[in-house]
Length: 300
Image (cartoon, rainbow, N blue to C red; front, side, top):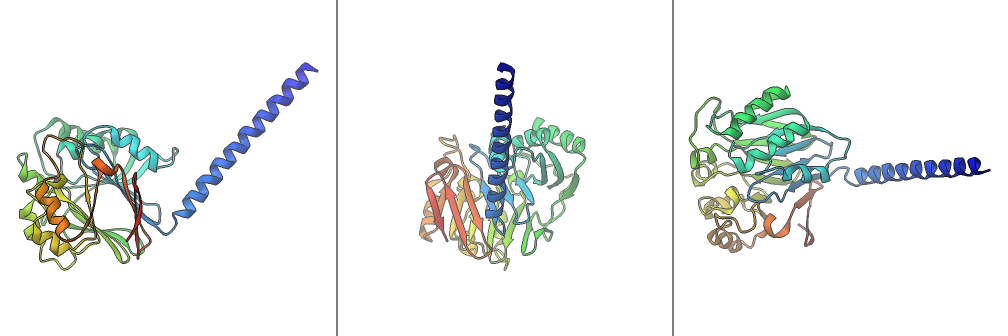
């Protein structure tokens, strides 16, 4: 009798576990269906650095930069199913440590199918590790240049606006010279658009200002809100409704600078900051935007 009872309890436990698994799978399926037709762009809170995750309506996954440390692994883990260990495309905007370091951790943890970067050469340890890991990964490697279009599905694409020429093999010193090699990309989903500016400064902003395709509803503010970027003329040309600032709390650079905040306020632009708002998720149905952060939801 005792053995029969134990067997019954074991069967009951097994059935409960199976039902629980089915419930989890059903919940995940419903969650996936709720996102169908939506583009999601997540500006991760990775401290004083930058990392942007894009999920297309057709489940393409793109990671732009990885922040200054391994925080990116935790952030991505919340956005990708636990069984998914593949990322379609990694974009390294430029090889500064606060954009690059986290990507090294991603390359070690995930299978990456494609890599887009500028191919410039800098003399740092993180850069050498980057070269080693992307060569080891066996991913398709592309060198960024203005005019390229990356298709993420019908009516969803990334246009590369900077650098203006192929920079592969060019040796660049640290600082502003590296910042101005940054990949600038414009993400479009039907009528919605995002301008992603990495760390460009005013020199590149002036070069871009006459482009007819610069206007975007969402502007990722360049260089963490530094006063060397986000000129009044550039902001006016982009004419965004929302400005995103990727920045760390109490950083030694005093980012974002007050002058930049005042320029944005002059145009009555909604400002969201990762140091204050945490991860910032913007969903697009192709016509309307929804922003979500730790302080609530807004529609645009």
